[in-house]
Image 1 (cartoon, rainbow, N blue to C red):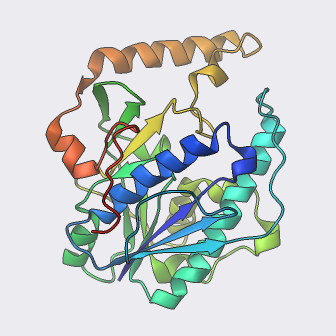
Image 2 (image 1 turned 90 degrees about the vertical axis):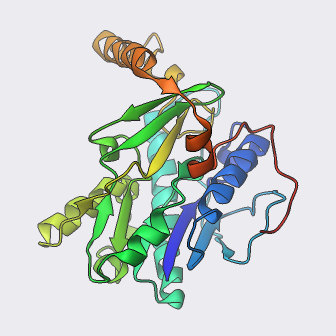
Length: 275
């Protein structure tokens, strides 16, 4: 059994709850189109998203711990820290819930990203004792565009939806719930932790996920965060140069990519409720 864990932000810290729900529904559809259906999806949330899609492999774990404060009009790093802790707590609880399914491996998926439909079948074909994998390759997609950028190395340093872990290596967890900091939700920290234990991850041999940017609900990667006038000039310049490079190196968003990752415009909601 393979388990996906999806932490979902609260409506109270969303720019638009409707947008959050649309993004999440696309993510959920992407996960559930796996070629091998031997998986579960645990969605951890304060409020259950309002979506049409229903799938027998999906369950919801609703939490009641305090929702982080967030000033929607201004980006404040301390408030972003609180959101990261909130996300980390949901990941922690998702892992605890996953124990009920006795999974061989688990993967955290951000609630706005899309993933390859080959992941579960790939893991099934590998040695069950494999430590796990990280996405060295992956796509970056700016919402609404007809092009997509393939990052051919170190994708896992950009996107959290990049790690597959053998379950018994990350559970029981090495940190108590009340001690969770912003670093816990950085999926890279799990990879670092496992490497230090002598159980490193291998690179996934194909692009595993699509990092969605500029959809107005990312915790981090919004252009507005990096181009504010009060940001350091060097940081602004680095972002602008990187953005230009991605634009000239991007490729057409092909039908093959759309099919494999389940990426579709948010307004093109499929009306079927079950698969």
